[in-house]
Length: 416
Image 1 (cartoon, one colour):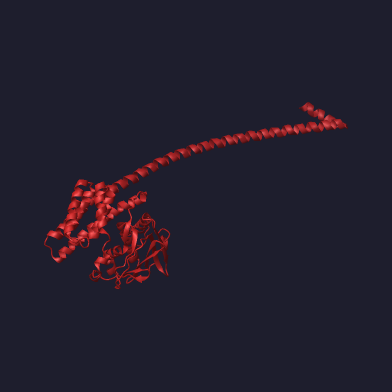
Image 2 (image 1 turned 30 degrees about the vertical axis):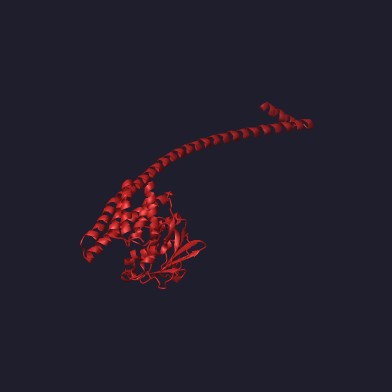
């Protein structure tokens, strides 16, 4: 290289065009060689960096795979733990039914056979009612569990919501009277009159639970002497139930009003009332929404499939469900009794024949609800025995109990 450099310097000192051209070519070649060496070095460095990056990516990928495996293990444990919890809850609910059935059955026996004064009889009736309420709550919780899992099998029937609302008013009389509240029922803004019907497609027990939760929430959110309105209307084949109270939903829970465990300001609140109402409304092919403001209070609007009815009310006496308990029972019971009890018996007999547990449970609960206000203690006790046999899936004994129940019903006027 040094000899070449000396030759180039010597040529450069001579004034010869050919030599000048040769010199330029040599210099350009050297420049290209130098550039190539630089490019090779850059490429080598780039390849080294790419190899290092790939190694780091593989390390990160390995760490991610390990983290994913750990998360999958933890997730499986959580799922197993949750499933175990659900299984325990299901077993507990089932096991709780037996002592409750005994409690209700003994209450019926006391009411029918024991010599009780008026106060004692009232206390036993309260015990029985509390037992029946808890039993219905357990049965409903099983249904809500299935709704959460997306496996609930809806068996809709034509039901009248007016007697259901009447029963809810009866059950909430302590709350209504204690705060001097008024529960007002209207149909398309007009006060409800006796003989009126408001039929929807759904399940009676589900509708009771949904409306009871929503109406109770509205009453609890109302100020003393407040008015809660339940308006019933229909539009384009849809039944619309609007529950209004003058209180506003706290801003903190407005966005999560229908979410599980959403509650605010209630010491005994579980945050499950509106959540279960949403589950039930959607399971019955409907929907629910909330509108609230400080100026206009709160509206809960429930949509359900409607059943058009040709019957029209003929009496002009408004049904005031804000009356004290002593006056409330003057309302015509026939117009407010549960509808179509014979169908409950038909469904029950068919379910027993086919040994269909869920259909049989729904039918016996509906039948008990139909006969609860006017049935004798003997009939109530027999229904309770029948329900116990169904729950234990003792089908032969259940059919025998059902035959005895039919015989009892033929001898009394508990179901018309």
